[in-house]
Amino acid sequence: MKIGEFREAVDSLNWNRRDLSGATRQEFVAVDVRARLERHIVIVTGLLPLVHARFGDDLERARSAIESAQATIVRWEGYRAEAQA
Image (tube, one colour):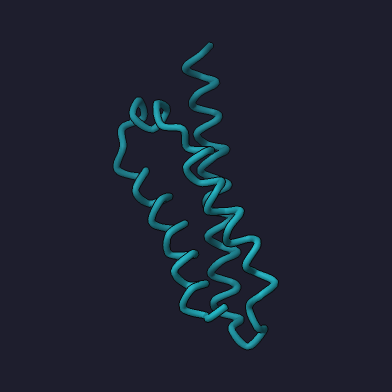
């Protein structure tokens, strides 16, 4: 795997997460955020061991992207629970 392919996977995860930021709360709750982000999280997580340590900045950026996406899923779950209560 080339580092460019890894960077594209991380960019895709970040793009999908950021794309949700412009939605209203109702629109955000209506989207299946878990399904949308989880597949990208799985891809990036699976690629992490394939990236050489010399690309430390890229690895840290990927870990940060995963954490941000997971936090977005948690926030979405909280909003959905509130909406259903």
